[in-house]
Image 1 (cartoon, rainbow, N blue to C red):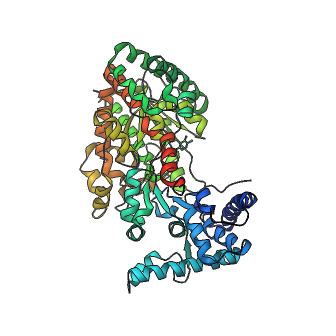
Image 2: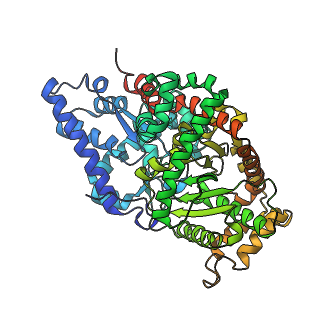
Image 3: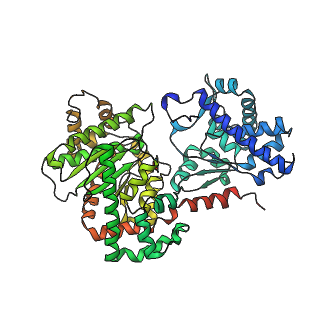
Length: 547
Ligand SMILES: *Cc1c(COP(=O)(O)O)cnc(C)c1O
């Protein structure tokens, strides 16, 4: 009845494994039942008629369970069962973050699922024999690649089981797949280069444009007809309209209507008044340090500091919306939510900020909230540390609805930038290889010291300006920014981010050009339709066995 959330304190708990096994086994048994009904117990055609797309490592126990069912219930031998299994399993990886890779303690798995564990042991034995044959004597490689780790607390690495048991392994954006091949799964790529492929994520234009933004749908239909709904590349036909003053003004009018609508929602939900004439600067996504909501709020504090000292030249009035849920056990994420709320409180009650800056934190972020938010957004914040966001899909929803992106070279942002061109995208920050390079001698204190704006922001935080009667509550955040071990490199990208935000401000003030850039973003969003994604899975993976 209740699926486990991704909760630090619940991770590795037995009930989660029980749920995974229950769902995987029930699915396989159902499919086998129907297969046998139609084909009898001849499994020759099973792999060409069935494909199981393992959505992350969560259902990966299905590799061993299908082996069990074919051998123990349908009496096939190991070799036949293994051939069938490895010809119908395919694995999609969704994250590079090591803490998200599932690994079950051998003690738990062998107690709870003894037969499944026995089968995994046999899969591993045969797999390691293959490695030994390819790289004789390379014991380091055996240690790196083994599905079952050694030591006092041995574990089953589910991602490795998924790779060994599948004919296809894919990442969800070009950079992500590249990083899988060169990093996390490097050894496996060397062994089986042909297994690896990319499937860049997409979002459905039915929900994320036609349904959530009927006003924009209407305007697009009038210009180019409605065939884009099932062939999103046809949004390219909007390009000639990008320079059309009349069309620009109608386009921005739809945006304004949607900003008025969102303002009412924000007033209800957050008790903050947004001014629809200001720029709507939005970051909504799960709360996580790698997504760097913290960098966003540092920019907000910097704007507040500029307003306080009367330096508003070239500043564009903004309403900043930050929204997202944190996993129940993720203390730092909750602390960042608290900081956003406290900063918002101080800014919103300051009369000097009234014409320049409004800030709101939106709780209970969910799909229905996003359906209200993305049509009303001017600026989409996609500011993760490069190399950490596998793809992102929020970035695509915003783009489809004519938001401009301020973003790093991460996940699908790279492909968005490629599609729309650098003139229509606000790029900043280290790229993924520069992040790895800069980690070697990272000195945030020196970066802060050398940057007057940054020093002033940190001084405001350290002085307790945003936590007057809540002594020291933000110390963990402040310390994380100064920590040379900060894996998210917040300080490293501060200056680039602030400068890119200033470019955004100036760009927004050229209304016609902003409208043009906005139209060009929607026009270039065709390749981020989930129709394209699904059709690639279909031709490259699911139909692979069709003769
Ligand atoms: C699209 C969406 C996400 C994913 O957003 P990212 O910015 O890609 O992390 C998460 N939650 C909800 C409710 C969404 O609609």
